[in-house]
Image 1 (tube, rainbow, N blue to C red):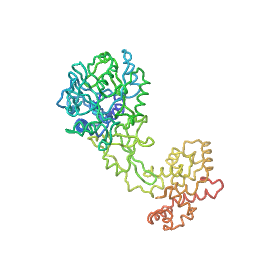
Image 2: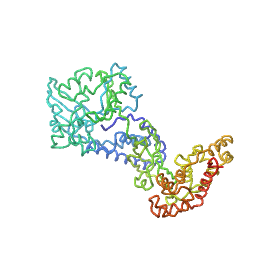
Image 3: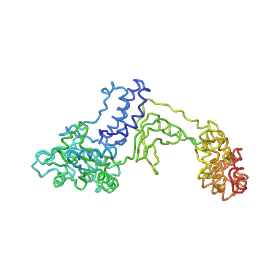
Image 4: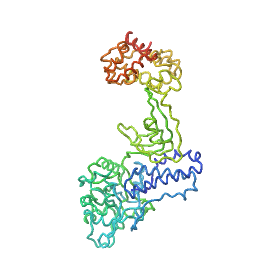
Length: 579
């Protein structure tokens, strides 16, 4: 449910830091423009969520927008009362009781403090799944359903009574003498009953929302809708959990199967994990759990404000996305001259991992994304917990240009010697040459490689294969004795196969598979360098033009020197790679 009550401490940490200096860097006009731009973005997403039921961003991403705007308002407090973002759609039905949202617990310690506070007041907590559907209010008078409305803006909602009356799982008449019954809950799609109805919808929630907005919904679609009553207003019992049997007797969804009364955080955490792992088998879509005081007297004592009760808190499932701000955009240049743009981020926590940067690919893609420092983005984790850009949540009004590297300056044939402009590509060549996929000289780690290169011990690629213990000690912080041991380990490195040497040399177009093909046919450097482009093309399935590039690369003086040293390492005793 939107219109969140934010307990977003992590977001404040991430976003608040990002705007620590912005107050000084933006003029009053720029600040006003950015606040107005954020307002328009928030209103756009409110429209998508509440009226069109087709949200483009998650609740966490929406919360980040709101927090960003709050942070910016602090730069100019005089604007705080003049830039309201309230744009939630109101309907034609006034709720009997306002439909508020929930506080969100950010982590286990916060949830524990909440449970302890409820226990201290003499009440256990009631735990239920946070069903993800369409919030609604149902009103019964003298047992008869007389009013049904969506949450809307919390005060006013849209009339959905005609559709609700057609949903077989929702009782229309209650066997009761209670004159006035008001239920707040979630209209949801029964995932255990669907038979293909969701195929044209983004999610079960979108399906639910679409059916509620349809004047003449198909009967098959109505049969899979249900209602999860998570609050009975002014009920006659002392504890909320005592109402479940009565609601079930009236014909409502079986709450007792998905409700637990408890008093400790460990049980709450275990149930949350159990529900999280069981999502695929549950009869409803859910995105977390809700924990609330079970005793009504304690709820009354704690009260609520205009946006949320103080006696309830949501604990979402582990986030699949996180919103954060771009601090800067940097670039890496690989051994082949490939340039990759890297977004430097305000640190954010996702699935227990602190994310500080995320790659976005080529300069061409960076331009297409139209992103800049100050933009708010969402990141996700892909396989092996690698962060990736998911979407752009908001583009800052004040665009900051980034100096882009000259792509024409870097190719598979450039930076065979070290220079300031070649810093990244050259060091990438060295790291690849000595890495596991190449010569596998692990003793010379990347930190030491960089130090030796910057201090002048390595000018071209071959220099790394001709390092001596005295040179290592002279051009690095390594002690002479350690330099001697390092050099000895390097000289004792087993001879790399010809295939690995081919991979190590970063020959254009030659990866492991083609290196294997070349090594199978040519056997030695002499045979390969003497071969024609036609022969190379034939053995690698490469075109003649690419084979000619390989011939050219192998003929370059710096590469010839490396090949000479590799040949020496094969011929000399011990297969030494340095002398």
